[in-house]
Image (cartoon, rainbow, N blue to C red; front, side, top):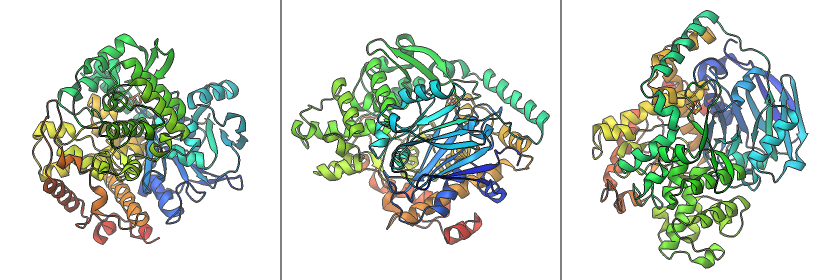
Length: 608
Ligand code: SF4
């Protein structure tokens, strides 16, 4: 099949069997690849009610039809499983080099099943696929192990690892690749840890079959040239996402002290300019990317090298815990990478604990003797380590903020910043209804990358609660996740303004299948609705209540900064959901209707 590796690799860790199956053409037609394949296999193969950390759960690793091609940023892949953090759908995307290598080895997906009793790693060298003993690696940090495996196997192997956080089943443990790229959200690393799979190492040497080689080359060249000619290219290359730090403070969107405020005094010390001046060594890109947003940095203070800190890190391990020294943030970043923890959830958990301490809900006695004071770097570092080891207070925080608020009570659930059990990424959104709706309706929990709608709020009016905002969120929720089906980065479009009109023609040149952009968006909508039905199937009573944000957004105004005093009325939160459900063709409880499922051709699957 043009554009695809052509095989699905099925690896059972219980009986250590390895099977190769042809990638079904029907699957490609209906779900395209990447997260589309992920949800299909999750929905159809993992039994209802499976324990996310039990052998019945599967970890599905998928590339897409653009992965490993000349399309700018064709280095994205998806990890899908049932989430141990939320009990619903988890899909985490990661850049780097692994997706290209997997395609070159001839595989579109790896379906990891069962669980081993002893640590293993998966070795893939084209046709050679082996499960190898990883006992000696158990307990090692992600970055340390990646280097070790590259030294042992060869620089041309691409590696994904888990750290102690994944081994210890921290509910938001991540999978690390390419020395600091993360499949971060939803606990995909804990699922890998529950299977005792420490790492995946892949080398591929084959080529991807292309339908129209000349047309593909010409289009790819055109796309590269457009990226390089973009007005935003130089700034993006220089600062990557850290360029957002200053802007977020200036518009009051930066999460500060557990999302109490939207800006912090002294934020200049976390700006992209400060970072570039003080710690950045070089730029770092994923496979085939003309616009390297990764910044590889060195902290002299701690003598560590780390990829980052990118925006979310500055937001959640900077503003949200009130750390203002970029080197402290870089070290916290490095600790999370090495220990294998999702930075967004970790920063939320620490910020939440600090606010509970500030309010007297917990004391040093509850925190292993630590005074959880805002801006204390040593406390932040200690908590990160405790979470990864599940030690003392870390055992509570390792379960996420929703759980911690249930343990500590006293109204703390109102400021446990999460939706569906997943901690919110780095945009304070009490005065940004479209962004808030993005978090409320995101298919994995409160994550920003499906719909980054805050710029739309600013463009059309931040106080406005109107149907166009719901429409914008839905539009973005189809475009952005489509890139995760295609196996390519969306940032060339978002940041460099690369015309979306390029993608259908180049996909046609690669696969030989003629699909319009609207056809592709329909596939994305199909995937979105199937993920929603997964929640409906797995979570008893699932519906509108699960889309609600924490009560802080309507009870407590923004404490300071440009949006000081702002909040959103509870009725407006409900109105946003009403508008969104109606436009999606869902019922008033947020469940896709029979008509919608029929329209999307999903009734055969959801009947399973
Ligand atoms: Fe990777 Fe950044 Fe390039 Fe996207 S823009 S492909 S995330 S380096």
